[in-house]
Length: 408
Image (cartoon, rainbow, N blue to C red; front, top):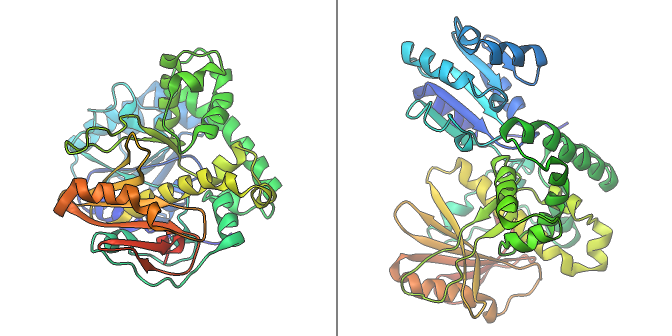
């Protein structure tokens, strides 16, 4: 298997140089263990809580487990959150940077008793499945360019059927190892079963765990749409409160993410409902049973997959960028929308609209023009990403650009 570069590695190294505890958080099988073991080297103790004996020791005597550790990698920390208090005591007594490098397949900040235990002592770095730029081994500058109203020329163009293939493949390294779509579907089926049986149980006590795989499939049909918890739960005889609770669990496991609506006092008719996105287009395709043949016969099914794919790619680019960004989406009552609104720490705003077609018209910029008008001088640029090789200006601060600009 190819040893792909992980561009977030520099951020992890920087954090280890000045922070006592660093947590690499992301979904299972995203490459966390491979990355942290390579970074830690042979002289640092490696402990995985997926090992039953190690897990038992950590749960029964967390203080004794941590006592005497100089530096260590502890894998899948969400399986024994009791360890975090013991780690806090250890790093308060010995405040050297880089003492504990943790991985977690759940958002620990959502777990009871965890959120405040390492405040000020721990930095969290997100690691999602492979970005296309990591697969192509070319670190792009798309986000940086977007905030300078620049679109760089593309070297690694991926168009048409090849783009469909990349979107359906997703970014999980183990899935990418499998040569055929049917074999990848088998991997995703096993992956979902493992998540439900192990990780869901680790982070939540729920009454209807048998419904979780079915709920994930129903959510897949709603990916890229505004969230309606009642409608999602109806097919499973679940009320909206339970449905939202279970969706929050999937969000904690980095499988889905709700994208909140953008707000402006200048626009009174904006929809206030969040969207839901999956964080890997390959997983989404498997849940929707969409193969390359299905897409070829019905291209209309590609749009939702492509939107999920682009959103995940943008999050990955942001995970190693020097700046920090807030993400949202915008839609008004006239259905003018912007798929992704990005705001930096200076309050500057850019927008991205995603189109599966090979042509773009002026009407595709209606939502971006609405955003530009509402933001005024804060609006830097807007881009419609589409399945073509040409960069085309559509007025001041607006461009159509190939989807391949996401990976250069």
